[in-house]
Image 1: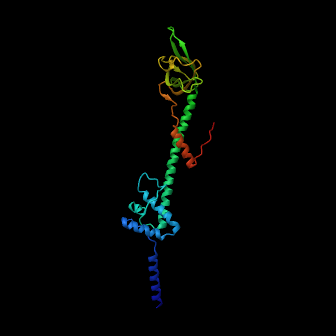
Image 2 (image 1 turned 30 degrees about the vertical axis):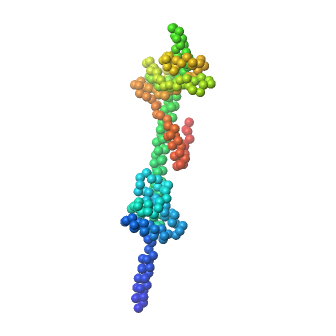
Image 3 (image 1 turned 90 degrees about the horizontal axis):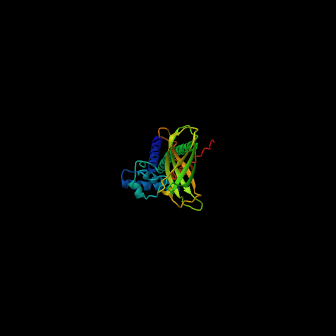
Length: 276
């Protein structure tokens, strides 16, 4: 008799447990998905339902490329059912929430890894550009501009350069940019790139002076350029004995610089202090 009672009680307990098992999401069909999602949602405490809705949205949006699951937009039950996928099938409400959180953690970890890779590449490019700028600066150059009068009485522009090669390379060609300005004028008279091939080159430690004659029919020959005009010449590239460019790593563009600063700020990457 007692055995029968125990067996009946056990059977009843199993039936109760089976009846109270947590509902799960069924994505085998769209109608099943709609019904099961709503049942699972209703089985959760009120305070968890918004979190559940967001979890389903994250899993639904993960099926589409190019969608930011870190900032999911609200979706209706029908939309979620239409995009139901293997991520959801068979999950209870709590399992769905945890699954979505796991997906977000992995996504954030991937994005951080990618961002740190971009930071590294941009910092390397920035460092290379700075190194090359310092190497070019070892080649000193002073410039002067004036108008001279030819034997025939015509005004001719003249650029005088005084150079000292402080690098350890034999320099054969200079790629330069000249900007000619005067007090009280916002726009440069001339802003132009030009190059100069050094006769026999300039060895390390050597100095030389050169007199260049720009085209007098071009911007350098403008008769309105005043006598107090100031010429600033920047070395954009140096070339070795074989004519190959030296120390020509380009600096970061403005867009790349902004990107680097944004990523450093977002991911808390500190800038190492200069060792100089």
